[in-house]
Image: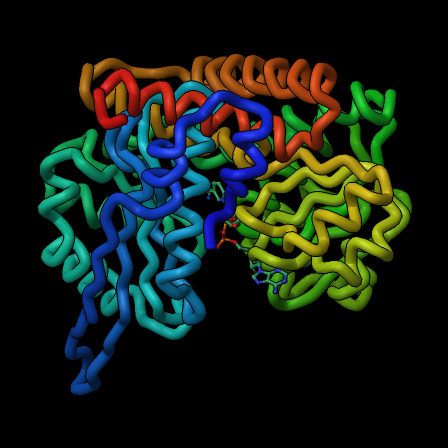
Length: 395
Ligand code: NAD
């Protein structure tokens, strides 16, 4: 099932049936059962590589490593990438990889060999530049370094460590973009500056931790954070700089709450930054925040979204809120192609420029047509992709 409801979108933009037909399915879907023998043990991983649409450029999208990832999930994530790039005017198409294995249950060496096997099987697309991978949930800059180690082409993969052709600011780019989006939306929709905000963030991985850090640095009170191990809560704000010293909350001694309670705390903004489908109908009914900023991909179910809308709770959709990562990836890819160097401040400026441009367009659409932010973002993005398909005489 598509993430974007193309029929609903077609009520707001001029789009042909042919375009709807093409966008309702992936352009390419590839499967492999990756196998390695490690320490006498067979390790297998069902692996999916999906290109949703390459109308606007090479397929761009991270590699997710998780014991739950499926073809359907990879498909939805690739589709989101198409529209994220289109909405923020980044000249990439949408792709994604899913490697179905528990990243915490495989040694670093075995993992490196698995990634090498992934490149061995799917490298054709990476060498040709048809697909440009990056980190996603469960993968890291070191994994991207392993890919670079095989291709020796600096533009073949993004999210690399800065000393081997990576980009200063890429690590924190997604969090920087989410914090920037939160700042703009809270001002417009809640009438509050960042230093007056209370925030709860689910997820303390790459995205959650950097979102917390920027919002905290800009004066917001981050009162709750959670990861797979536990959820911590302090009404007067968590000591974010102290927490940032650890990669997980596993050993934290801060006051705890039940992880399920985090999303329904009495805060101004809730930021799901971990996994998909966490804002269900039930959660949405009990949400106390007046604003949801989607840092994770696909964190709100269709039913949850309907409840939030009926309750007048605004949702800033994933394809805008978490686009900082792909914007930075584009700068890294461009840097790799040109051989130039980019300062961290330039990375931040590019994120701010692309996100605030898209935010402005989305807000104008909402004001003119009285739609949700999600429908506005989807409509603008679909129009951009459909126009590109026309430019290429595909339709
Ligand atoms: P990550 O692997 O670095 O971190 C994931 C975090 O979620 C960890 O803290 C983990 O403990 C936590 N988590 C997992 N299951 C959980 C659960 N049931 N409840 C609470 N916490 C849980 O991943 P990431 O890169 O931070 O990605 C998080 C989300 O953001 C994903 O949806 C990803 O697709 C999206 N995203 C990531 C980027 C990026 O640049 N990394 C860019 C755009 C979107």
